[in-house]
Every structure is written in C-alpha cells, then in structure tokens.
Length: 89
Figure: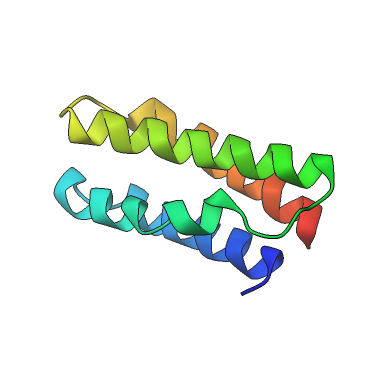
C-alpha cells in the first residue's frame, strides 16, 4: 500500500471506530498502528502529519484501554489523519 492509501485507510477506520464501543474500537485502532508508523522516507511535512496521526491514535487507544473517556480525542485524531491524507493525496 502506498502512503495515500495508508492515510485514507487510517482516516476511514478512525471514523468507523469512533462509532463503536471501546471494546470494539480498541482492536480497530491497534490494527492502524502499522499503517501510521510509516515506511518509505517522505518529505518532512508528510512525516510530521503521519506522526501526528500516529500519536493521536495512541492517545485514543490509551484512553480506551484505561477505561477513560475519549470523546474529545476523536476529533483531533480524525483531523490529524485528514491533514496527513491531504499531504499525500
């Protein structure tokens, strides 16, 4: 998969996971980690956007794992994934 496909898949999965209860969303998020970790070297803007999306996904997963509310975290994660996708589209 290329960078654009990864970003699109992450964005779609985040939007889907947001609608799910924590026990179902957490495995969905865990499946995104590999996509958001990156592969081939990209321009700095893309690397930063991908890193922002990765960290936002980790924050949601951490909150869900600890049983804490993640409502406020979803919007920032989706926005980060949208920024990443915009750079590679």
